[in-house]
Length: 44
Image (cartoon, rainbow, N blue to C red; front, top):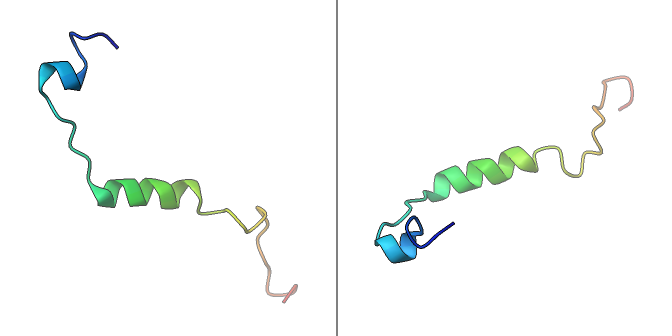
């Protein structure tokens, strides 16, 4: 990234929404802790 395109130098700001960040986090860590295994009714 150069000073010609960097937001600090150009005065432009990047708009981020918290909802989008939270959705991305939940998508990444949706399977965290489950070990990647699905429980079946017989296993319960």
